[in-house]
Length: 99
Image (cartoon, rainbow, N blue to C red; front, side, top):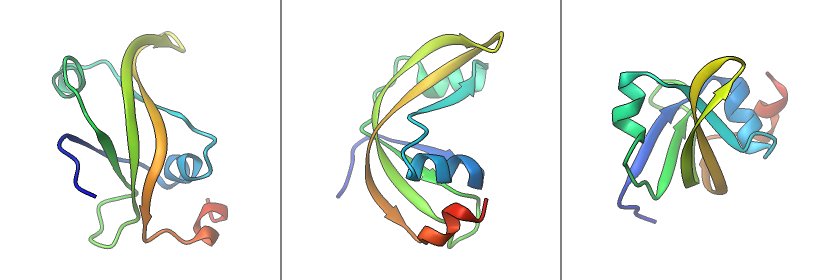
């Protein structure tokens, strides 16, 4: 399945596993100039998550449902809303319990 606009994000194992387990439905990023250019006034079809930088790192594609500017724990952040998990690659179920 090919998507037009893909937001690429890297995650630590703990957060990747939580999204796979469907217990994490929002990804947060600090409101910095870098994230502003990547998130504000942009439309994405899907988010491509990677668990690390290795060539064979686990990956998943998740529906992009939009982004909001919020305050969380006293910090200004972007709340990226996650939809359905569309595809998971190179992730073993046993990996989720290894965190």
